Structures are given as C-alpha cells and as structure tokens.
Image (cartoon, rainbow, N blue to C red; front, side, top):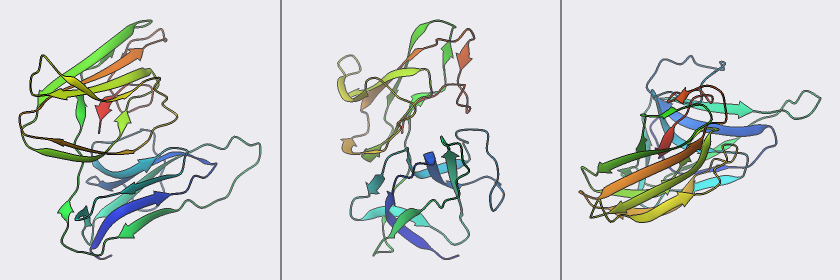
Length: 220
C-alpha cells in the first residue's frame, strides 16, 4: 500500500513448510489464496526463498529491493504434513525495512540453460557457456535443479579454455534448496560455464519445464 525499501529477509523453520518462494509478480495471479501446480513461473521476479531450514539473507549496505506502491507480491508455499492429523498454523516471513530510500537496486541474474533433454536411464551433463555483457556483482547464489539433478558446477575466467571453479554443489538434494551468501565480482567480458549433471532413472525422456517432473539448470 506504500513504497517500501527492503534490505534483509528472515524465515524461521516450521515443520509444515517444505519450501517457499517470495516474488514480485508481473502476472495476473489472483489476490488471496489459490492452488498452484508449478514450481516457478517466468512472470515471477524472485526476492527470497528457502527450504525446510531457518534462513536469512543480509543484503550489503547501500543495496536493496525497491518495492513500489501497487506492486503485487506473491509467496508460494509448498506444505507437507507428515502427521496423521490436520495442522493449522501460520507462516511468517520477516522483511527488514531499509533505513535509506536511495538504494542501489538488487535483482536476479541467472546462469544456465533451458536446452535440456534427458533420455530414459541415462546420465547426462548439460553445459551452458556465456560471456558477460556487463559488470556483475553477486551477493548471494541459489543453485536450482529438480529431482533428477546430481551435481552443479560453475566456472569462470578470462580465457574460455582455462576456466576455474567458482562454485559447486555435489550430491544435489532437491529437498534442501538454499540461498548462500557469496560475494563475487565479474567484469564485463568474463567467460562462464554452468554444468548441471543428471541421472534420469525414469523410463521416460525428461526435458526443460516448470513442473517438478520436468528439469531445470540454473545458478541464480
């Protein structure tokens, strides 16, 4: 209902919350509660997310999210009740109001690819290379694949043929997605390679898509 500057988030784990995503939406999702059958839509601009553990994100001084009056916010909750009884609870996500209204805007920059095709019963490595068209300063990372992912590696360097490992996750677990604070600075022209490894243990081909039963390859 009013302009808001935010420079931090905090979520205390609750047993019923499997994971969640907080976004500013560019779409026409209805106000109030509604059912959602996808993990992510490209009309959402993510601000913060976490899994089943207590998570916080501290945005560096001088930067933050500038939310304007009238922006529509969306929190997508994935809930899991492992008991035999109904659960009634509240989910609380705390946003810290910034002390300054003149912040460098922070946003989302994604490395990865939508070109994914996993044959049944196959181990596959999907790779994406790019050359940064601008300077990029990173303050936190979110690796993202779905249930067939096994590991993800991010490499950078001045020479595309001599890249060095910058970030990796071995033994990928879809149930434990996380945001990790990590300060990285890459000048314009830096070469990157994002590699996602999969094992398709199903009897069907799997390609890129928004559903949990499809796949993705991103370092956000």
